[in-house]
Amino acid sequence: MCAASYAHFISPMVRSLAAHSKESITLVLLTKPAMIISYTPSSHQAEVRVLRRPPQKQQDRLALAQNLLETEKFPLKQTRFFEPIQTDRETFWDGAIKQYLSNWRYNPLLVGPVVGGYLSALHEKRTNVSPAEFLLLALELTRLEASDFTLRFSTAKKTIKKGPVPPDSLAPNAQEDVLSRQDRPLILEVLNATGKRGVAQELTQYLRDQNAKGLLRVDVLQYENYPTQQDTSWLEDLSGRRVQLKQLGHAIGIKNEIRAGTAGNAIYDARIIIGKDFKLP
Image (cartoon, rainbow, N blue to C red; front, top):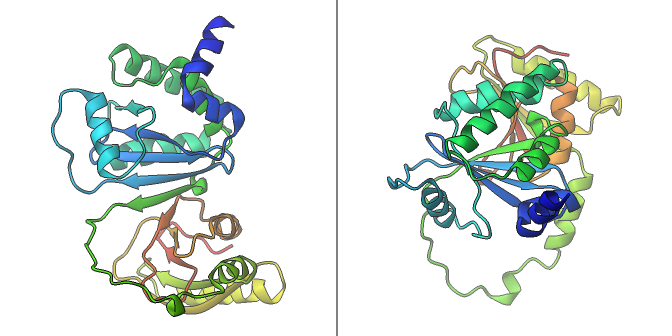
């Protein structure tokens, strides 16, 4: 009890997780390239930012993690890091994190390797996550699915010169537009990355039928081919409607992490990229 009270007192991560706070916590995964996970306990949603440019070489893992957070403009309240044995990002994310999220309910024995991996990392000083923090993080993971994670790839930021914005140019109903967007159907674009003809058209017809029956509130404006073939399917978020996208993913059998896309001038809320693993419901 004394150890738990002490950990609760000194750790902002423990306090946030225990209180289901609206304030996000961050964890730096020292993979190649590195990832920064920002998790909000109150909404059970996580954003995974994949860093594109390699970090500066440093011997001290804590200093490296702090450097990554500073570069990506994250607050440095209490830096927590974890360096897996398998440092390749895709191998660690797909082979460890997503496999655990998808299969632990059917195979509780997967908890053993997770605990063993943490104890090994703690002994070898590949992490500074305390046992109390690990316990609460592990409990949070049991509530999550892959679709609760939004994958965002960092890009080089361009400096855009902005002049003064005239008051008349500000949209007076901007906040109302955001609220109304949450109420209207999801506007979708369907892209076929399977290499087979007609798959996007079949899914489009299925979604339109579901919308007509009142089972799904979606509106598919366009379907076409994706530039390259993909093995897996995913949803691409363009408007921030993550709860509705998760529901859509469950409805059509796409339970992978949601990827953050660049909307540009597009009028869509999201894109569905159909990979070779997709099966029409």
